Structure formats: C-alpha cells, structure tokens
Image 1 (cartoon, helix red, strand yellow):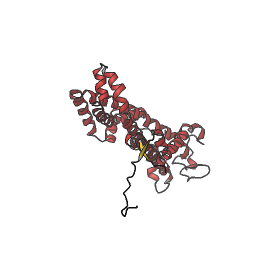
Image 2 (cartoon, rainbow, N blue to C red; image 1 turned 30 degrees about the vertical axis):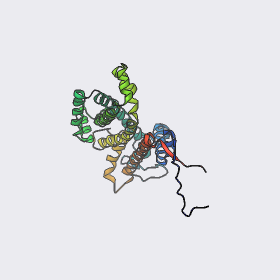
Image 3 (cartoon, rainbow, N blue to C red; image 1 turned 45 degrees about the horizontal axis):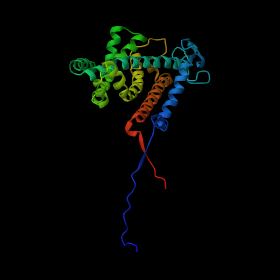
Image 4 (cartoon, rainbow, N blue to C red; image 1 turned 90 degrees about the vertical axis):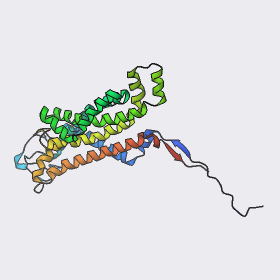
Amino acid sequence: MTSRFPIPTRKAPPRYAYAPPRRRMWRNNGTLAGLAILAVVAGAVLLAPWLAPYDPLTMDPPAQLQPPSRAHWAGTDLFGRDLFSRLLFGGRTSLLVAVVAVLMASLPGTLLGLLAGYHGRRVDGWIMAFMDVMLAFPSVLLAMLIVSVTGRGLSNVMIAVGVASIPAYTRLVRGQVLAVRKQPYVRAAITVGCSTARVIFRHILPNVLSPLIVMTTLNVGWAILNASALSFLGLGVQPPWPEWGVMLREGREFLRQAPWVASFPGLALALVVVAINLLGDGLRDALDPRLAYQPRPHRR
C-alpha cells in the first residue's frame, strides 16, 4: 500500500576529498598565468647578453627617437640607444634589487617577529614600539630618507627598500606566533624541556611559514615598484646604466613626441607586478588550510 504523502528523503552529507597544495595551485588559472609570465620575463632578463641585439650603453645619435621597427623592436631613446636591449638589462637590475631587498626585509623581520611574539612583555614592547616608529613613515618616504643618508647607488637602494619593509614582516609573524604559541604541541615542547631556540624554529616557525611565503611573494612586486620610484626620482640607479625606473624618468619628457620611450618600461613594470600578484594570490589559496578539503560528488 502506497502512502498518499511522499516520505522525505534525507540527503547524505557531502564527502570531502583532500586536495594537496600543489594540486590546488596547478588548478588555478591565475597562478599558471603568473608563473608563465614570470618564467618568460626571468628567462629573458637572465639571457639578456645573448638576446639583446645591441649594447644597452652604445649611443647612436643619428638613430635617436626612432619608433619601433625591425631594426629596433621597441624603438630608440634620445641618445639612439636600443630600448629593447635596455629593457632586458634593466629588468636584470630591477629583479635583482627586488629579490635582495625582500631577503633583507624578510629575514630580520621574521626573527624580530618570532622574538616579540614568543617572549612578549618587555621584549615585545620594545620591538613593536620601534616598528611603530618605522611605520609612522610611508615606505617610499622612509626609503628616500635612508638613501639620502647612505648615498645613491644600487646597493643603497637595496638596503633602503629592504629596511623599509621590515615592519610589515615583524607585525605579520608576531601575530601568527601569538596564536600558535598557545597550541598544545608548543606547551608540550616547553614542558618536556626543549630549548627556546628549538621551540621557536622547530615547532613555531614551520606553522607560520604559509602567510610568510605569500607576503614575501607579494612584496617582490612592491619592492620593484619602490626601487623604480627611487630611480625615477634620481635617488636609485644612476644613468647611463639601464633600469626601468631610470628609463621612465628619461622618457617622461617625450610622452608626446616619442611615447614608446616611457611606454615599454611602464608596460614591463605593470606586467611583472601583475604576474607576481597573481602568483601570490594562487599561493595564498593553495596554502590556506580551509581550502584543503573540497566536496566530492556522490557516485550513483
């Protein structure tokens, strides 16, 4: 005998499948696009001595301000120098400054954040008070102040951009350590007599690496922009050596007459920064533990 009223069926709870970070990263189209762009740019700038058709420092006054052509793929500047060759060699300088500056910021910033978050009280107060003083100045302004004291040059730009980014790493790591140090495994390590260094570097640091890796990746783009801004203002890399900020400064006077002089360095900067941001977003999604388990459809 059939019932006149349908019996409600209860849906089975969804099953979840663990997706490792590598798989989640490779499934992200934005991450793949960022990696592809960065791979092409990094390969081109590393092979600049073999890919550049001209010497980036050789002047040819009769060929000044020529538009892009077969002979000069990106045109020439005021002194007849090939812009494509200067873009390749300038990319080497910009990427070198960014990578070294990020390393100079992440290493001491991470160490200070670990000390402040783990010890607390007086150590935390002194470290964060100093970081608050540094954060009172915008990063570009603080970098300009450091360059004005230490002098112009490539090495001083690396130091300035790196030091200006230390407070961001310190605050991030400190916040993560404050949350991690209350976990049972940290308390257990302290109870069994582990040294402070072992507790920090063996039990706490591995659990704060995920946001640190994401921030480091994203800060490469900011370091490139800050270094280019210093060079644009005349405080960074000095001409005639090519650098994207220097090329922008040299081309700003010819925006109407020869817009390609400033357009190509600007496009290169924008392309690299967008690719780094795409990669950083993909790493953030891949390393987020809340996205590790994804619903798996039921099979009938």
